[in-house]
Amino acid sequence: MSDDKSNQPGGVNALLVVISAPSGGGKTTLCHQLLAARPEMTRAITCTTREPRKDENDGEDYYFLDAGSFLKRVQAGNFLEHATVYGHSYGTLKSEVLGKLRVGKDVLLNVDVQGAAAIRKCAEEDPELKRALVTVFLTPPSLTVLEHRLRKRGTDATPVIQKRLGVARQEIAQWKNFEYLILSRSVAEDLSRMQAIVEAEKIRTARAVAPAF
Image (cartoon, rainbow, N blue to C red; front, side, top):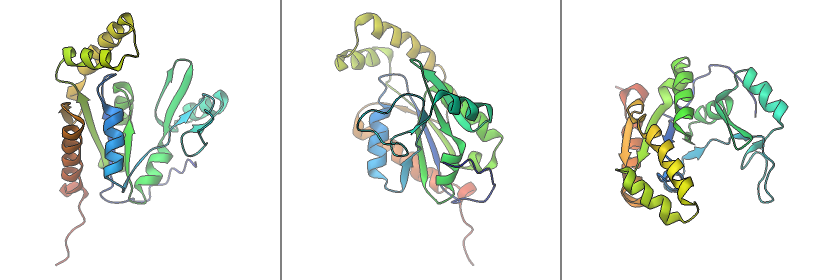
């Protein structure tokens, strides 16, 4: 988990795929499906200040840091994005992402719209990240469909669902800041569209190796 800031070139067409969605939008399922379908793609291991659960391992599930160590990394500008959720901090190290891109691995990140905005900002200041970055927003076609999905999960009371829908409305308004929009229909359809996006991005001339003549 080094913070090497060198500018050595990485896999020319390796992708940093960032997926965002409102709560209940299906991004976690889509990410699992995409990773299963593409063995050359890996998730970025994020840092957290929460305690590991009994079945979690440091360096495999998360990098587990104490609050002081996490803060030092924030102050040093080591994170692509970071946030505090329910009293615990989470963040994605720039070195974690670049290290995988540089050995030709596609990297998948599942973040909220604020995290995606932070990553876009970092990419504007780093040509290596900018070349790799692909941003996708996934959302049900309407709030009515989203509410149905949230109720179907059966995990939240009505006031909590209404609060989630209010947040979702604000998040969905950010869709134009992403390069791609997927209106979620089914797990299979969402995966098919996501696969098409990845394949198209792989053959963009900006990432291509010049053919030999």
